Length: 186
Image 1 (tube, one colour):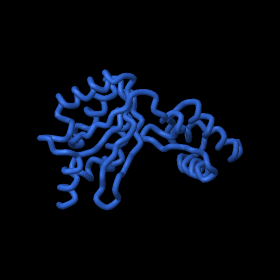
Image 2: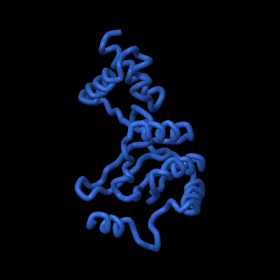
Image 3: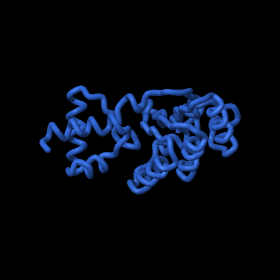
Image 4: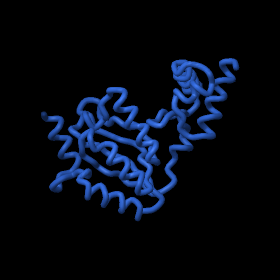
């Protein structure tokens, strides 16, 4: 397959299938992962709207919000990361992103698009294997998730479960902005 044919294939695969990792595209198309990364960069430079999420490359159509949305402010350590994400997806939620407020860079956002326990397991395994720190490490565990669900009732159930597990912030009535002001002063 020639270069342009491979790039067309990449677009066809991610459009039809949703998130696909660079490694999976590499395997399916018989090239290195670095070639896939370069192809995606060239496709983006040509105006193709391709998102890089924790679950792989996808199109904005896959990321489009289709249900009810709520923002949860959470606080926990690395040890509770998988527990938090699993709790959300097991209550019919899709974790769209994670956001932290950095004192210098401002808002840092990672697209997650996690909606199944298998996706959560793959994400946390990749995070641990990489040796990289999650975004929550920048803010002493405080982070925000945008979560989608089919109904408000699903979101209410999720919120109650996060609260029961002690994963929600703010504590003692202090808001996120107050907490971030304290983090940036230290």
